[in-house]
Every structure is written in C-alpha cells, then in structure tokens.
Length: 76
Image 1 (tube, helix red, strand yellow):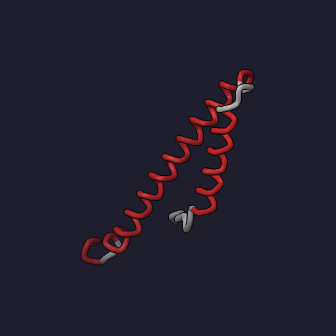
Image 2: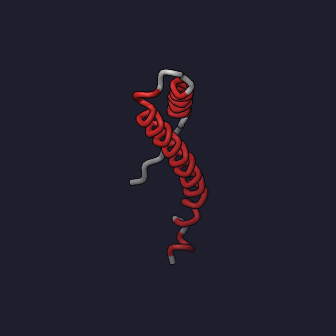
Image 3: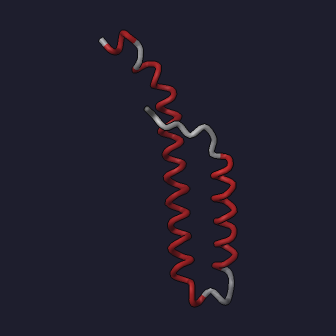
C-alpha cells in the first residue's frame, strides 16, 4: 500500500501561518528568553517545508511513472 497525500492546501496554510507567527516573534524586542527555542522551531518548520516539497515532487513523479511500472511489458 502506498500513502498518497491528496492535497496539501490545509497543511500549507497552517505552515505559512506558523511561519508568520514565528517571524513576528523573532522581530520582538522581548525574544531574549526564548530566542533559542524560536530559532529551533524556525529550523524545524523550514525542514518540514522542504520535506513536504520533496515528498510532493516524489509523489508527482511516482504517480506519473506508476502505470509504466505496472505495464505487463515492463514486468516481463
């Protein structure tokens, strides 16, 4: 069984909202005590964004190639 993500619209919206919130917090003059935590979350969201983008690229390629690999000629 292959897990296919049908749509990332909701995920992307939530990700963007979280990144905007973090950018606002990073711009605060009162960030001092939580600066390391905010930077860690920023890195985590950036990594998640990159991973999601790569997943979708891989999925798009798989969905294009899957019928080719299931063809009887290729199986032989």
